[in-house]
Amino acid sequence: MKRIEDIEKMELSELETLAELSDAKLKEESAIEIENALACAMALEEEKRSRRQKKAAFCSLAAALACACVAVAVLLRPQPLEDSFTDPAQAREYVLQAFDKIGTSMDKGMRQAGKASKQLEKPAEIIQKIYR
Image (tube, rainbow, N blue to C red; front, side):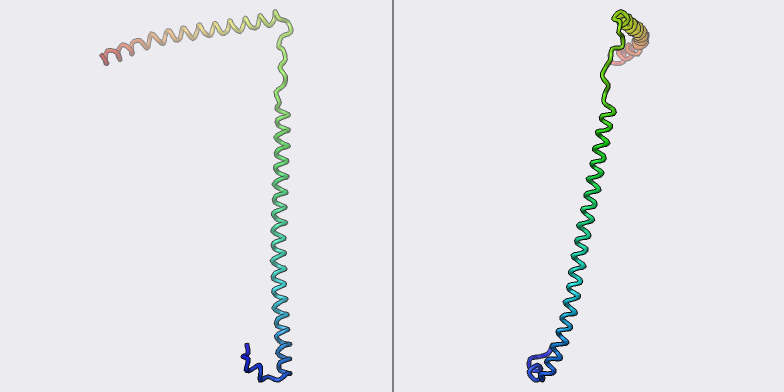
């Protein structure tokens, strides 16, 4: 940068040459700044577009998942119950067989529990003798 005294001593042609040089330098710097600003704006726009694409992909995935859930719910919907027997006498016979099977199983379980309780009486007596 020139001092004021130096500029005052310069001739008109020198001042014009200096002005032209500094004007060209300013134009060059301005062009670089404009290019940088445009590059930043383009990068920002690219980032926005990328975010929009990610959001669109996520929304598409969520919609597909929702459709799949609805399809599974429709396919796994419980079917209405139907009567197994059309003849009431046949149904009564089936129920009696089921109750008979339950009774037989209960008897067997009671017998086993009775045997086990006899075997458990001996250790119970020993434990009572220890704590008396």
